[in-house]
Image (cartoon, rainbow, N blue to C red; front, side):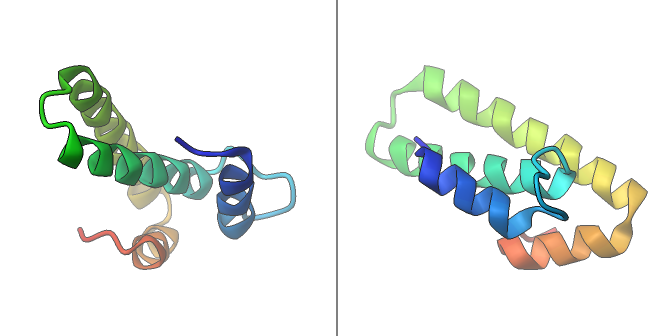
Length: 88
């Protein structure tokens, strides 16, 4: 679970301008952090199928955001993948 401080830190790191919370970069970064925490949870609790479904929904949402960004601005897309350490 993300604390307010963690979320504020992520938003500050990936915001394109002050007060930016809705850009694809910020949204993908927040989703990536939630995906990582749920993945760690599922490593301990293998039979938590409700969390697994939520994780798959978040992965799909992140995939759609990344597809939008790749169609809109390829340079921003590649720099975001490099900053987050995602492979594509």
